[in-house]
Image (cartoon, rainbow, N blue to C red):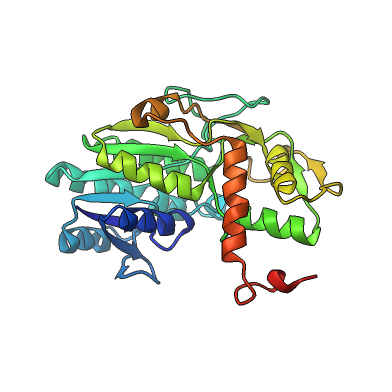
Length: 294
């Protein structure tokens, strides 16, 4: 099986490439730069030519602009990367019967509690990022062999997970949101499940996340506990203070994916444990000043 991974140099794309290779599946990575194949997914012709040249049996689209402020500043640019490519991929899938997985977001739900939203829950497009991702979902649905995956991930190499670990270790200022809830899972767990879903015949929409819902404050404190750090300097904050407006209650019900895969999704504790373990393996005296800090 030959699988094309778009956004192969990102946090998720990198782990999906590893997971595919570990299963003995031929993985071809494509990105704007730094990957084996070069593509600008915002250019429909460039993407179409890549699909024709590679002739893969499946595509996993991990490419995205997740910078909410940048999306809000330029909604058209957000649509070109988060939405429009799914239309090209859906057309390719319908023409070839190729398997197509569109990685989406959990940034769709409002509320003041850590609720779990299933796949039929009504979405709220509260910002340009959410609107652009939902447009990608809508186009992906046009392919009969597509699967749309809503998720929320973290990892120790970059992004939120890296920031949490560095901030805790350095006792840097941390404003932790007490009213923003997610079902964050570790990126390696997500990548492994994506490969399982790729090989399945399931289509439509599915949530792929931790089985626990936690506030960002709870998540950060769980990481601190795993690192044996007393987070006594953390300051509670409200996500309502941020602009652009964020979705607030982004917990996901993972009943469907657990049934499909025949196993439970990771808990908050398992997610945090994997994050801290990953940090211990990727932070070395040659890769980070933190490794030699007293």
